[in-house]
Length: 100
Image 1 (tube, one colour):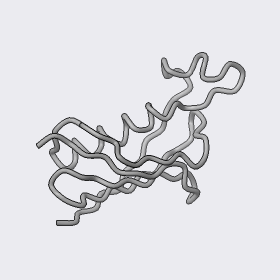
Image 2 (spheres, rainbow, N blue to C red):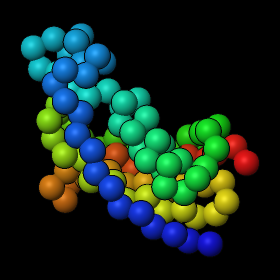
Image 3 (cartoon, one colour):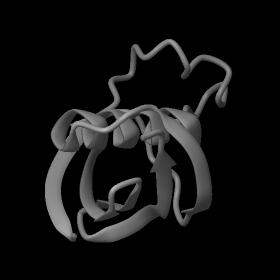
Image 4 (tube, one colour):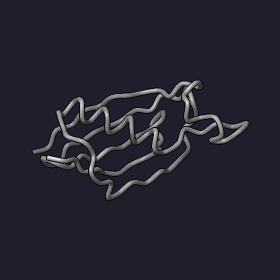
């Protein structure tokens, strides 16, 4: 069972997680990226809530206003792999498991 879905999102400069992360040069927190990835996968594949993130790697910072392209691959009934990029440059990869 392998299914793929591509999507994209942008975190605006007014996102509530940005103040203080970091003052003068805001960077989108990794947890915000993961929240968008998991929400997109749950909505598209009809999955339950996330229960584990066994592998996540952040390769580059994401700035407010940058378009993040996301490739989601459903590997089995409870696991989704993801790859996030900006203009073809990887920024985050990993996989997560969901509740049945």
